[in-house]
Length: 139
Image (cartoon, rainbow, N blue to C red; front, side):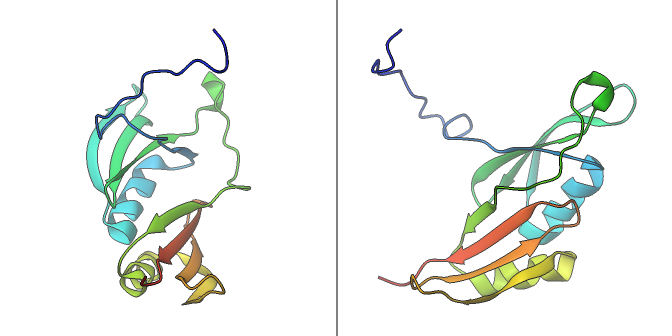
């Protein structure tokens, strides 16, 4: 197959786009945190025989997020978050930012008007994942 080959894309909202898949220590607690901090809706959960979460599908702000427990015994050792940020584009940045902080996220960058015009701030969740909250500037 040539790199130039156009592949069929899926328009189903459940399976289109890029879906982040987070591996954390304590996925059940992370799911509850994401519900409190970001209004996540749990769509599906697959528990493992030992009680760890093999897969949990969440919806946040209309997008999907997968979460699982680290499973070093199956080749999935935990690796701390670095070099990526989960970015939320929302119409009410202050409300989303305040809710995340109230739920236990630590402020990394206070919510403020940025040089590109958006209201933006960053938090770190209790599981080491970086989140950016972006309220686009009015056009």
